Amino acid sequence: MELSEAINKRTSVRFYEEREVDEETLRELIKAAIRAPTASGLENWLFVAYKSKDIREKLYELIKQGHIEYFTERGLPEEKMKKLLKRFEEGMYKAPIYLGVFINKNVKALKDEKYRELEFCFALESAAMAIENLMLKAVELGLGTCYIGVACFEQIEKELKKMAGLGEEYFLVGLITIGYPKGGISPRERKKSVEEVLKII
Image: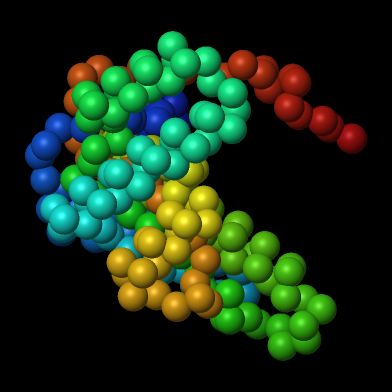
């Protein structure tokens, strides 16, 4: 598969087959992820695969509650909220693997505290690029992925760290669903054109 094809086929997949993603495939995804640029060569990232049935069930409930909170805050009309809950009943975001991508806030190249925020941004950027690498590799392997933004809600992040036995020094960059897509995939066109988002000076 050409890179351009993987880029154009990548889309947020919300429904998955029950089929398991084996460990070898997971390792291939992580191999691709860690080829991403990494600030100061620190490789400051940790990938936690939440794979056991019990943990996935707990995670699924957290994701559901997170979406209810998010859309309540956005003022989603009651009718649309019912549709959202129906989609959860149908298995939306139920995946064979949930992958937590963390960084360690204590891992730094510069010791002066005035650079703390900058180094935190460097680590976030590195992990975000690793996530994109992983998502593109997933397309090549016939897998689907989706970034679960609500997992970064404080209480959900806390539970994710607790499940993984991680301390407060770890920060969740993102939770990614991974699995074999259920049904057809239709990548959406972007609303803005290249001309609208590019400035040449």
